Image 1 (cartoon, helix red, strand yellow):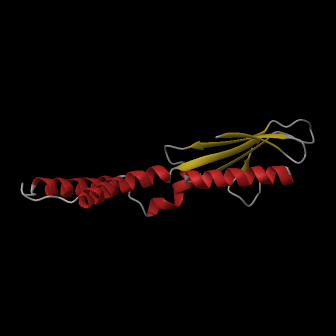
Image 2 (image 1 turned 90 degrees about the vertical axis):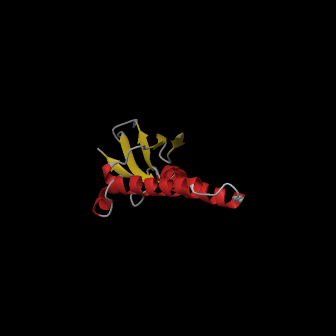
Image 3 (image 1 turned 90 degrees about the horizontal axis):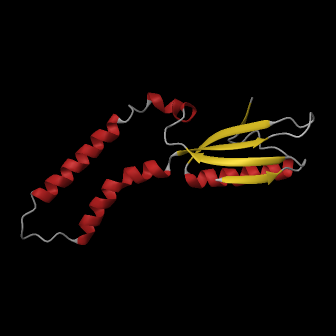
Length: 145
């Protein structure tokens, strides 16, 4: 998502939000002690797949499986991949080329999780730029040199 915003001081800012397909180090730095990487997800996915395959293969021919059981299995299989996709990190970038010595070029970068959060943060940053001529220092974005 790209958005042009005019600051209260007259500078023109460009807001960009991009989805990150690989986790930046600054997002998951604290999770490294808790998570063992991708292997727990692969193991759990394999266990769920084996259990569903066993359920389907050992079901006698005369048994009619209700539709809600099939839907429940589908939800179980798709829950973690959909959660992974929805909770991807988004990089939010606000930059301005500057126009004079009084207003040098600036670049603010931050990372948030989730598409809805990225949209809300982008709107909040745009509003701060319109009101205060720069993003909020206490928000997700931080100035980059």
